Image 1 (cartoon, helix red, strand yellow):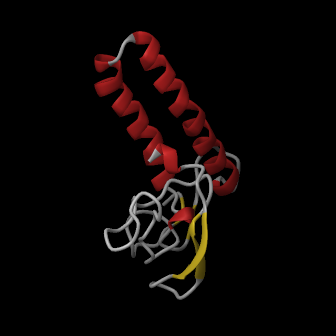
Image 2 (image 1 turned 120 degrees about the vertical axis):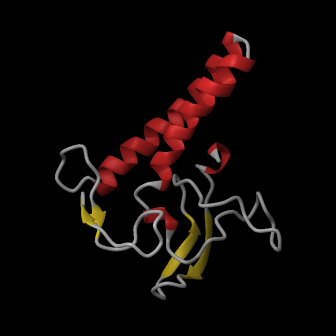
Length: 133
C-alpha cells in the first residue's frame, strides 16, 4: 500500500452511493484496494467506487497503525538493524504526511481530533457521523 500513496489515477468514476463524480485514485491517499482481477491489479488500484475513499477519515490513518504494527512484528525481527531502519524511515515519511494531511483537511476546530462530515466518510459504508460522534 505504501507504494500507492503517491500514485494518482485521474480517471473519473461515479459513486454508486450518491452519484457524484470522483477521481479513481487521489494522490497522497491510501487506496481502498490494490485493484480488481478483471482489470489491471497493482496498476489500476482503488476499484471500490461505492464512495469516494479519498475523503474517508479512517483509511489513511489505519495505514499509519499498520506500518507500526508491521515494523514491530515483522521488520524489527526479520531484518538487520540497518535495513530495518531504512524501512522504518521510508514508512515514517509517508505516515507523517498522512497525519499532517488528516489534521489539515479534517480537523475543523484545531483540537487535534478529526471531525466527520455528516456523510459516510469512514469505513462503515452507510453510517453517517458528524463531528467526533
